[in-house]
Length: 436
Image (cartoon, rainbow, N blue to C red):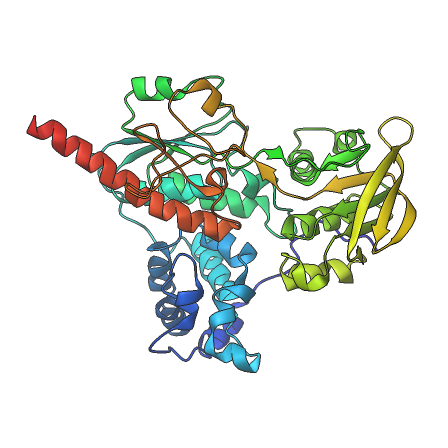
């Protein structure tokens, strides 16, 4: 049976959530908080949840997280908060992700928690991109009294949260709901607006913004040096997933997704993106999906839970194997690839090949703006004081475009630090202006 795009986990019921919350030991030195990249006050809000104080639980979560319903679904809990839970030693870690998701979902449905919106008098900030880094910057700074406007090139906000993570892991309505909460803080979002094309960084400064944040992610896939790699039957994972997201949202036709019923598909790479691409290919009707990885399973970067789910759905894995040659067939279809395992070379019939080997930033903004330096791979260079500021005064960057984070929550962690840097910078500039 071909799996569908419905969210796989139904989440906790109210009695289940309360029961799970009551298992928390409320450690004096909570390992779960140390394991959380954004230092969420996990024992505190779990204690409130256990007592049925849902509004208090949500208020505590809001202090550190702008996207709890998203983090509760897609964070690497097994390596972070839950992996550091003292009960994990017995294999009985508190299911923190499920509890966070429950609180966030319950609050959205009941509209229990209402935040005070501060007067926007500290300055104006432009945020380029509405992925996890951009949304975190917007939420944090808006809560601190800054007027924030987001500029997004797509027709919907959310970035990779909306068009990069499959629906079965992160439903689009959940992303929309979290973004609406940020808009309710007073954040404005401009859609179908590409900075570096419609407007430049200089245009934004001329419009009166005190600081600008670049949270544009990495949109240009890395390239592998394999003969035949430029054949149209070879697709990049991030672009494949984006096309599926656009198709599900009604922006493109089914045939524009390319991978379809009966296709034999292989995915190169073994991170979470590779798992998403492989499982999504099955949902688009692929007859066979094989993940090809040049190392062993102990070296894969994908979460074990994601790997286990892929195996359950029928994805095959070839370990310590590399693709050495790609042969094209008619039109956009491949004919075969040559794979090598140790010293054994094999011909593998194939229709489509998906590359999940990482990506680098696009140069659209940097090429239209003077003074923003990048490294040899195109990642934006930033400083530590004020944290996140580029070599162009007043322009900050964070998230994937700086090559620091690797997951949604790590992008949020980096963005929270940049938000502090932006606030310090604007306050200092305005103080100097007042002294003159």
